[in-house]
Figure 1 (cartoon, rainbow, N blue to C red):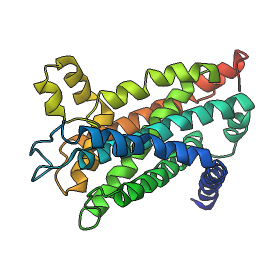
Figure 2 (cartoon, helix red, strand yellow; figure 1 turned 90 degrees about the vertical axis):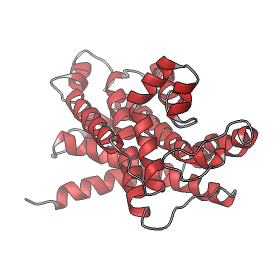
Figure 3 (cartoon, one colour; figure 1 turned 45 degrees about the vertical axis):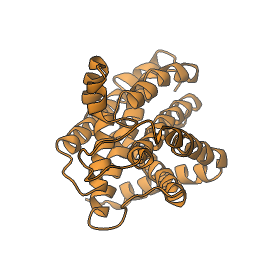
Figure 4 (cartoon, rainbow, N blue to C red; figure 1 turned 180 degrees about the vertical axis):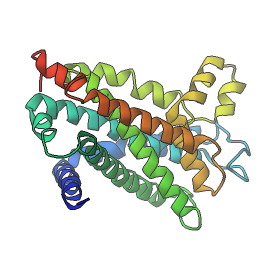
Length: 273
C-alpha cells in the first residue's frame, strides 16, 4: 500500500492550519491571556484561601498555582478544540469542506488529518502557556522520567478534545448557532471538572451532583491523566476513558460527515455545504 499520498495530504492540511494560525497573532494572545489570568490573578488571590491537602499525586502540600496548571493546560486544549469546530463550520459554509472531502482518500483520513492539525495547534499553545507559567515562577517537574508519559497524556487529551470539536461541527449548522452551543459545552466541561479544585473537595463541600458529573466528565480524566503523569504516578482509569472518548467522538464525527448521512444530507436539503 502506497502511504505517500495520504502522508502528503495530512502534511498539506496540517501546514495549512499552521500557516493560517501564524497570521492570526491575536489568536495566540487570546489563548494565553485566559489561563494566565487564572494563574497570575486568581491563583494569587486564592493562595491563602484555598489549601490543597496532601492527596495523590502529591507527596506534600502544594500552592494553588501549582495545582491548577494541568487544569489550565486542559483549558488551552479545550478552547482550541472548540475553536477548531468553529473553523470547520466556517469551511463548510464557504464550501471548502465539500471540496476537501471529495479528495481521492478515505473520508476518515481527511477528518483525522484535520484532527491532527487541531492537536498540533493545541499543543503549541499549551507549550507556550507552560513556558510563561515557568517564567512566572510556577514549580513544575517537567523534566525527568515523567516527561514522556506527560507528553503522551497531553497528545491524547488534545486529540480527544479536538475529536469532540469535530463531532460538534457535524451538528452546528450555522456560525450563528456556535456561541450558544459552545456555552453549553465549554463552561460545563471546564467548571464541572477537577481543573480548578480537587474531586474530593466537591464531595466534601456537599455538592453531590456536581461531584458525580465531574467523576464522569471526560475532561476531568484528561486533566487528571496529565496531572498524575506530571508527577510520575499511576493515573488509574483516566487514560482508558480519554482514549475511549477519543475513539467514540471521532467515530461519530466520521459517521456524521458521511454523504449518505449527516454532512451529505445537509447539502441535499439545501443547507450550507
